[in-house]
Image (cartoon, rainbow, N blue to C red; front, side, top):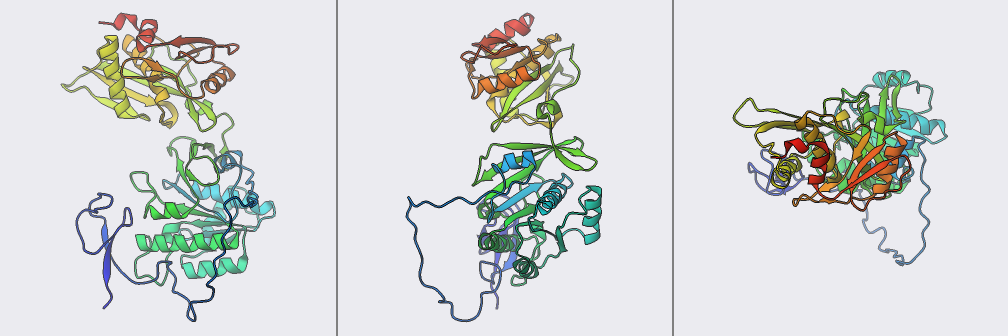
Amino acid sequence: MAKSVFVCQSCGAVHKKWSGRCDACGEWNTLTEEAASGPPGGLKAPKGNAKTSSNLDFTALNGETEPPARIVMGVDELDRVFGGGIVPSSATLIGGDPGIGKSTLLLQVAARLARNGLKSVYVSGEEATAQIQERARRLKVADSPVDLATETDLRKVLSALKKAKPDFVVIDSIQTMWSDSLEAAPGSVSQVRACGQELTRWAKKSGAALILVGHVTKEGQIAGPRVVEHMVDTVFYFEGERGHQFRILRAVKNRFGPTDEIGIFEMHQYGLAPAREPSALFLSSEQDETGGAAVFAAMEGSRPVLAEVQALVAPSAYGTPRRSIVGWDSNRLAMLLAVLEARCGIGLGGRDVYLSVAGGYKMSEPAGDLAAAAALLTSAANTPGPSKAIFFGEVALSGAIRPVARMEQRLKEAERLGFEQAFVPEGSPTAIEGLTITPLKRLSDLVELLAADLVQ
């Protein structure tokens, strides 16, 4: 009688018996019964003598091994995120919401590489051949020599790849692949783990650059076990709102390059194209004369990006003031409001506070504290802020404004885009031609400049 185990569909942990809550990740109702059969690799082990080779060659740590030449994909934003191009014999996992543009971007990349002389293969387990061909015609890449296949059987896919010997392979998506050696359903943890491991092992041996497409959950995480992220060399998330024209490709793991870079793309009629002026995507076209807006100079890897922080402070119509935040951490907003009240004498605790970052951008670094404070102060005072000004700096609980990294790059980007004023922490560069720099030591200094009348 075949034994069965219970596998968590969220983290991949294996349990001997069912329970309502996974002990590994803490998620509820995620354990699914699966047969405990099949080798860990997914495919059945070959018959015959297993002792084919008992020798293992070691290499000295100080030995010199030439790194493999990267494959330049010809898309500036994509090459930037990969660290200069995709590496042969590597496996990449790209996740994103449905309809965000993953298949569109990868089909464009496969077509471009095929036109450059590389053998490109696109395997889809979700769409029919006619659908992909129609998309290729819409993207104006139908004439590219890309080998197209629609299959979900892992054994057939690996057999075809071994015969084709491609240089670049796209599997869309890993959740649709299934191995006949496992009784689990396609998309389950066991199937995703086994198929991901077999495809990654093939890429390492064949020298091909492999890209796996992954679905995401409601929480924005790649569906299936996190062990797939450990198998592959690079993990990227494709972000963006479907209502906006831009998309952001963000690296969260990269064995061959930086993990803090982003690539910004614009959605056009003929597919995705690199954004020519990324900062312009997150700035308003009109100058707000009523207050409640401030421009934040952010850093995304080695790239400075300017984004607009918008705030609205309004009288509360209910007993409990409302806090609504889009694109920022709610805990940092609560901290900032507490510092404004305790250190600066500005009480906003009894009023509704709405804060949003324009364009769907997400502020993740503490350097955005000063810009958020400026937006809140000008909205509460109902007065416009300084024209053509940027803000950046971390606000401490004591009310001090702390320096942040790469201040000179932020200032140069602001000057390049036509900004004339900068409110920054003390210690930042002051010799930027065309930019009037105002250093601030404490948050109360900003209050005196923007909303002195609000001090109680």
